[in-house]
Length: 79
Image: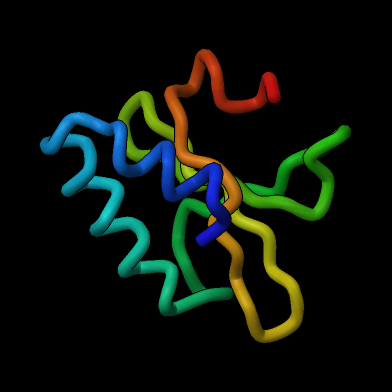
C-alpha cells in the first residue's frame, strides 16, 4: 500500500475502514476481482473498486498490485 493510501485508510471512520478492509482482502484474487473498472485519462493504467461512496484506486505492476489511493468519490480523482 502506498503511503498516501495508508494515510487515507487510517483517517477513515471505523465502519468505512472495515468495508475497505474487506475490499482489500478481495484484491488478493486479482485480476479476478469483480467490480474493478479501468480508469482513463491521467489515471490510465489504474483501476477503481468502489464500496458505497468510497473508491479504492489500484495499479497493477507485474505481480504487485499497489493500492494508490482510498478516498470519497467526490475527492478521489482530484489529486
